[in-house]
Length: 501
Image (cartoon, rainbow, N blue to C red; front, top):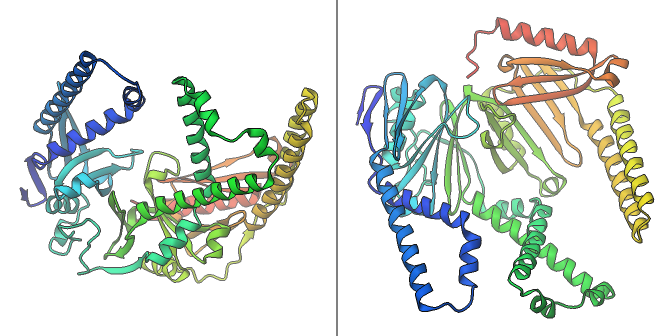
């Protein structure tokens, strides 16, 4: 029950018991998956052993249900005038009190179990947490909206808050909201095709190694070898190697595409008076709220594949204790240039300055290539000393990697630039793609100049700008320029009266 700016002490929805029990079972399955597989593949067992296994399974299930019920009845949450209070515990009770002014984000999650009983999970994060400071596992959508309004100091806008349709977390009311961007099926397909397929390829390779390891542990390795073609035949056949390569690439692309569809299905970015709302997800639906004053950094980037499909990945970075935390980075893939301009306009980040972009010292290239040459000589010497049969192949691979890294260093140097004007710090970067990070000068929390021996000999320094969401680096600046930027930003910070969070 809500009274003024408070919420009285209350439990979660009774259906939270189902959510808690399912979560405990999922954790048990993850922890004991190998044991379960071995039991299933363990061959014939006597009736006594089957009966024992059944009794143990039923016992674990009953204990899990009891634990879920106890957890539900011992969990309370409430909101006073200035604190969120969470009480929880199984055998002993703990009480967490979080000041409302520390709360940075209130996000919603819906797993398939939550959707089944029409509930949401509420995650409350603070500036001092790398994850969720508090979690309310299962409440109704109305209570979740009510809680978010109070915690985010929006109780005076009651009646105008973002409402959620009872059928789905992604069904957002259009009243008093402006849609900035939504990911249609064609754009979703483009995002999936431009994902990191190398990561998916490693997943496939890891799966095959896992199969081999499990077969070896179960004394089935000889059987597995009999089902696979002889490795010498594969090496000697260009056609077979080509087919395997094509299948691997196709499987990697398919895995990336499925993962993207499941993660970003029905993605929407909408605008409120003073915040952005981001929602997406097929199986697990998620919704995030990013208030303007709590956004520390915005940025956009694209790889060469994303450039081919002509889209960017826009992201917001909010306060977190973890340096540039992925958990506090809200990514919106598939954006066009006009969507980024719309976000900038809403935030007031429309720099009209004629200030030119500044590059970094050419020593950046020399430093990177020098270190790369030293590493290549060391590794190459070790390869030659070992005198193995495949030394020449390893040297060729090392040479190709060396060429790739030299090109990467040169291209990265060409794309690093910065501009500080109109109260904004803007930094560009990228290697085979491009990126830009942008933050308001008064939101910088600390500044550090770092200079190693190489830097000091050339009167250079790396400039680190620390915000509540992590650090941003401008490398290889002349020491005089770095000090000038530091002094200017420190003056801006000290003279500004704007609320940075």
